[in-house]
Length: 74
Picture 1 (tube, rainbow, N blue to C red):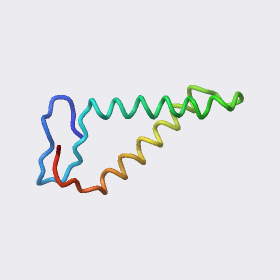
Picture 2 (cartoon, rainbow, N blue to C red):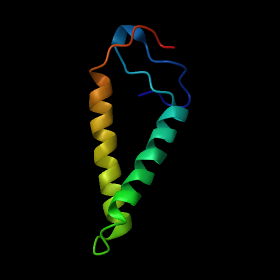
Picture 3 (cartoon, helix red, strand yellow):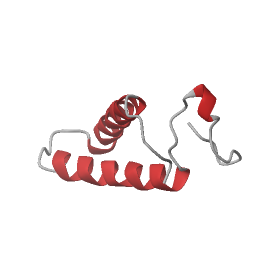
Picture 4 (spheres, rainbow, N blue to C red):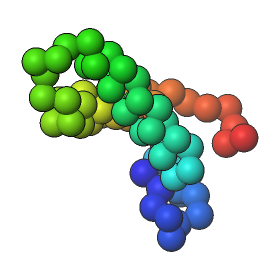
């Protein structure tokens, strides 16, 4: 993963390229969808469960993206 003080990952290391801005937008979208889905279950502890769902979704997204080979970085 690229940190804010890095430009781009070294292509020779085959690191995924996910800009932090896009990553933050995706994280916000995942959290919004999780809240909407879990909002229909009043017995669910909303914030803890939402964070758990978001974390699992982010892990799955990172795994899926690590298997994708982009033709270019643009």
